[in-house]
Length: 180
Image 1 (spheres, rainbow, N blue to C red):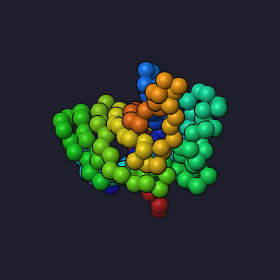
Image 2 (image 1 turned 45 degrees about the vertical axis):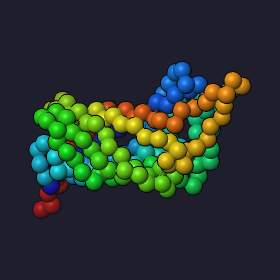
Image 3 (image 1 turned 60 degrees about the vertical axis):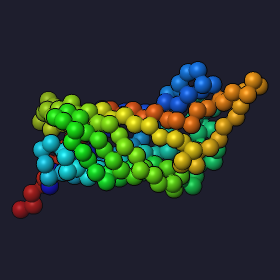
């Protein structure tokens, strides 16, 4: 079995949500980790776990980020982690997969499907084997207890329910340590 870990310094975990229903606000998590275990070279049998630290959420706006950590949204005191565990990887063709798994936010778990593009495997200048992926998906934040919203004076919503997920993930293959 081969184990791969997310190289967080070369990866991004981001999201977008409609604001005032006319533009998107983008954010990302700066502290996350993940592991992939596989017996195959093409990742079709991969088992994946992933965790993001809710306190690392950033939208480049300090006040908004603090609000996202409150009970109105992520409630980072009670639910400090977002967790994902794969159930199935479906190879669509040589470079595309469908990743199906359970996503848990605020202790609410729902199935999610992510579209995955595999960009290949290579060796970096230090001899480490790396693999690159792009993942995209959507969720409804209300399914996870993230129901805060408000309306404008004209009656329009301030914040949309659909959240678009976008991740660029670089994995590094762990080298097996031989014990003499």
